[in-house]
Amino acid sequence: MELKDKLVSSFMAFEEKVDVDSSVHEMRSEGIEVFEKNGFPTKKDEAWKYTSLNTLLKNNYSVFPKKESALDFKDVKRYFIHDIESYKVVFIDGLYSSHLSETTHEGLDVCLMSAALSKPRYKATVDKYFNKTAQKEDSLTALNTAFSYEGAYIKIPKGKVVDKPIQIIHFSTGSESAMMLQPRNLIVVEENASVQIIERHQSLTSNEVLTNAVTEIFVDKYGMVDYYKIQNDLISASLIDNTYISQERNSNASVHTFSFGGALTRNNLNFYQKGEHIESTLKGITIIEGKQHVDHHTLVHHAQPNCESHQDYKGIYAEKSTGVFNGKIYVDKIAQKTNAFQQNNNILLDNNATINTKPQLEIFADDVKCSHGCTIGQLDENAMFYMQSRGIPKKEARALLMYAFANNVLESVKIPQVKSRINKLIATKLGVNLGFDL
Image 1 (cartoon, rainbow, N blue to C red):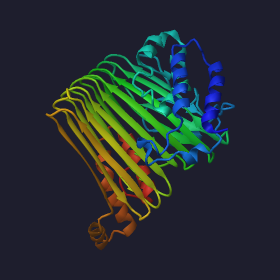
Image 2: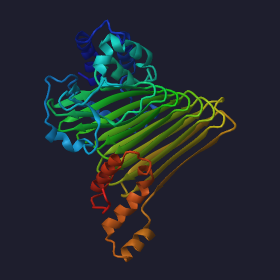
Image 3: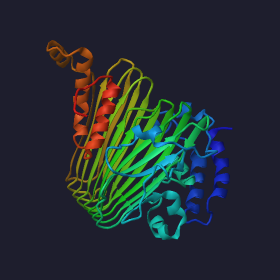
Image 4: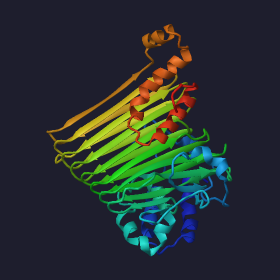
């Protein structure tokens, strides 16, 4: 049975396990209908022209974990940012792990999507926000909606500045020969509230894992969200990450994406500006090798005047790895005085490495300041010669140049412990000790 048919037939079994009277029941049914109609995207679809899922779809994925797996903190400690205090929402094979988590309802809600979808106290928020900004006709988003049950539910009330970051971590243990996970996150930040979030998907097995994640984030007026995605998974794991962010006036939202691991990673990051004086920041670093594939698709929709957006993505590609960057800035006619910047810079370390980059502007306003650009090149041989002539070995010289190339993205990271962790991951990926105070 093909994976598409298996998922459609599995939906019936899933429906029997969840509350069919839930307010999201109709959305789930509509989601599976969209997926059944459209199926998995192919390279015939313009948005997937350079990314093929064919190899992944040959696996016979288990849709539901057959048993709950347990992990000790000592087994997974290295994957947490454990040198800061934080709230933690941890899942193992798609199921909530209470002994690894630290949730709260004191002054804010950091808890489970399953609770939000089933308990009356959350109904008003779910009815107002769930599946309201996600692209309903996108087949993979629709598939996630159909199977939406578990993930993180975060609600920051009006005026609340969260005192410590929130970590959302999904572990897969390999209890099945191949597993497909569908986590769904809903994050609501009310007026004048502020939160920092760190997200990670981590496989602990050589078995194939495919994660199809959807996160919806709503930032009310004067709200602030600072979001970090750390993607450094095993080569047996692949991730399709769909993130939708809706912003109201005078809000600030930033997303930093660090892509170092995994076989195939697809990041769909969509910002929708729905008021004036909004600031949106999208930044990322990609360092991959072998036959790894990372695809960044971004959208910033400027629908109101006097707003800003800043995109800056750096990519370093070695051996036979492939990168894709497709960024779009869309400016409505009403969105005068928009200031939008988009840049994608790439280094190819080997002849067989590939980057497909396509920054785009669609502007219907006439009083705007918008720019975009991309570069593709190799390391500066003159700089290499200069450093080696002063006693720096070739390997370290290459690493320092690559680190300098990516460093301006790191400069905007606001959590020192996250910056330290990314520095360590970059040093490991480059195979050197950079000698910084990490």
